[in-house]
Image (cartoon, rainbow over all chains, first blue to last red; front, side, top):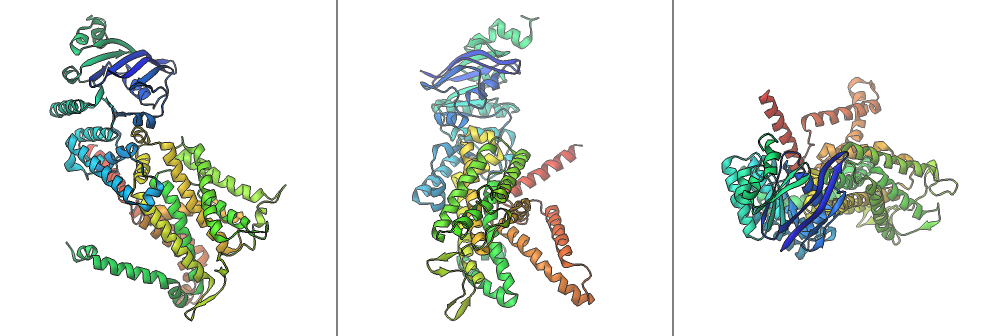
Length: 254
Length: 367
């Protein structure tokens, strides 16, 4: 069953065509890789998908509903959560508080609830806290729950960002280069975590430069180059695609 | 664990401290009256008024991180609303119980109106625009006496009804258990009650889902959006709540003073309120309260320099009026130098400054 469908998405910045009629579709439960050289438009596609950028043309369908032009918070509410290439933490909040913010979209308490703090608000607040802690355990950094987010190690910050995204109860988790800057051990740990998340029923859209990780993890891969999708398919097929080889290594070897 | 730590955790000690503070607050105006002078009771009234204002601005600046330099506009709107609806100017005399919620509501709307166009702005740009809004309101108040006289222009509104509950006017001396309660005493208890309410609301908001969303917006707006926070609504809510505190404070100010004019709502007022929260510790409620006490009371206390000079040197060498602003300015600079996060920083601000220090040390180590 199709979870996300992008139909000929285009986006340009001034004279630069960052996305040129890109179409792709994600099946429920798969890990879908998005690769391509630097500046190919991968992150732009993420930003358009999550409503941070307005795009020029094309449509998104998510879970059978149209998602084109939604605001970022609506996108999160519909069930797409993301992480950022250059980690965006709430730096001066603790790891636990960061993840608690992720529960915002699934909770309700407003001003009156906050001021009166009745039994419902207290119960909700308890739920937020315990769920956030459980998610920190899930990604394996519960021992740092009360540490400042900015004091966590790089790899743990990535994990915390994933926990925060999972707190919004997403159907689709969009990860922008989660393994960037990680060492081999950390990457192996991340791979395991992503497999667990997938097995728990969350579809994953993954931008990644670590070819080994992409090849070992993704069910399908799409390759972007200069804003165009130049290949799509199983990792081992894409790897041998002449267009992909050319995009990565230049025309000489092709 | 030190003895002090142990004492802090003892519930009996907490109760004792609570009762002590409650008694102290209850008799404070009489203490000030006997030990100092009637003027000091009035100064304490103003301290309470400014705590309400500062806690309102604290929601906008301290919690949500939106630098607002035109906050006094809401104070002005609240004050004028009260003045126009309870004075001979229009011949309308609404009762206080109706004016208080009305003032809160109307300034709330003003908060949203002034907040809405600034939603895309951050930092310096936001500060400039809000500063402009503050001035616009003041200039409007100054000039809305023609062609139709609404605000009475620079002359201001006079003979504003004092706060009264039914026939019980706070502007008269009442006798209770043989104790005389003069107007400044009466207002003290009203202001105290409302200040405690404002502190309570602030504390509850800080530690809530909304409070976390404010901090998230302050820390990283893009990430907050991606987490499903409707940043537009959450910022407008901060503006609206902050404004309504300011509006209530304004109404009380009008009733207390009996006279208001646009002169009371200049840019320097906004800056002083901002000063109070920065000095005390932005984002921390106890810090804000301390900041207000210092900024309002310190210049008043420095008036005693005149008599002090007289006693020491036999004559007044430097006019205390000149000296006190100098000392006040110096005090501000010293606090900012030695406690950049404020006297009582919020945990989050403290972390921020510590993190900056660490970064500085790291970058120094590299070079």
